[in-house]
Amino acid sequence: MRPALVLCVLAACFHDPAPAPVAPPVRAPRVNPGVYDPLGFLPVDAEVVMSVDVNQLRASALWKQFEPAVSAKAGDTLGKLRTQCGVELLPSVKQIAMGLQRLGDERGPSGVIVVRGLDRKAFWACVEQLRGADPRVMVANGVMLVKGEPGQNPVALTFAGASTMVLVTSPTASPDELERVIKRGAPLRASTAFLETFGRIEPHRTAWFAVNSSGKTLDKLATLGIRATAFSGWVDLANGFAAAARLRLDSEDSARNLAGLGQAQLGQVKALVEEVELSSEDADLVFRVVMTQEQLESIVRMFGVFAGGP
Image 1 (spheres, rainbow, N blue to C red):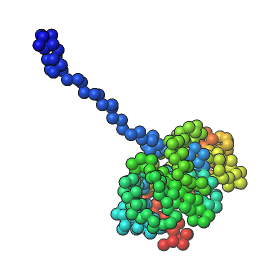
Image 2 (image 1 turned 45 degrees about the vertical axis):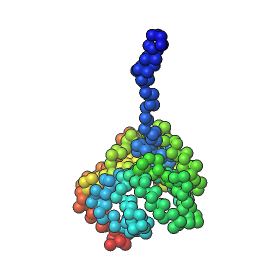
Image 3 (image 1 turned 180 degrees about the vertical axis):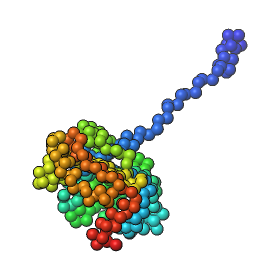
Image 4 (image 1 turned 30 degrees about the vertical axis):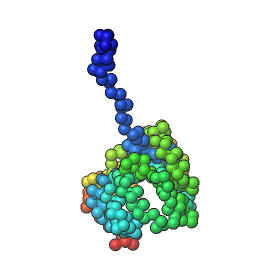
């Protein structure tokens, strides 16, 4: 064998191995940003937007008084989930947010409800076990559609993340409508008017709300000569009770005059609470109140008597 040929054979047999192919980078599946946004999935045309931090609510002394009534009202549903599926819904929920419109509609309000904290796998496993138990419920492609009772809106729901459930209720609620809602992400972030109102809210509190003038919610004030364009506020139950609310009026003079009239009516309230204040800030009428736990329980009992309760 010629030396050159020998060298070629040796080179072919003992050359450095070819580099292994480079695997493409592993990318985590894209998560809809609305899952982590407190305003995620709520419609931009909502008349009322509200949110409840359920963890804070459950930790409050007030919840301990009302929890039995809430559980009793939802007893059949919660009991079925507990006995047949081993699923406890209430303890796992962390936050509930909703954006609603057409609140005066006979069929009920329309809008979007977002529930955070649920276990998606456990929920769908339970749904599978209960499949066929209710003829109004249909499940396909990871979407549940619940037909409404006569005169009520249907509901479509699915999960946008591992623990974020999105529900749509409207006369036209469907899997397609639900898909469009989820694809929009957080449309409220595009509303300058809402963000201005939201900036005056303290969203870390137990609950907060915002009402705009696009619906009929504020119309009753107009009959009293009060022209309001927005109403917002928060409630905190961490230590007793604290709340603040803002009513946006048509002018600074209107806010100032209404504050002056209202201050004269606070005399009786002051005897029942720790602090109470009514003032004006720019065109906003601002109300603040603070109560100790004892004062809160006393007022709850008082309203229970007036309402015919225990």
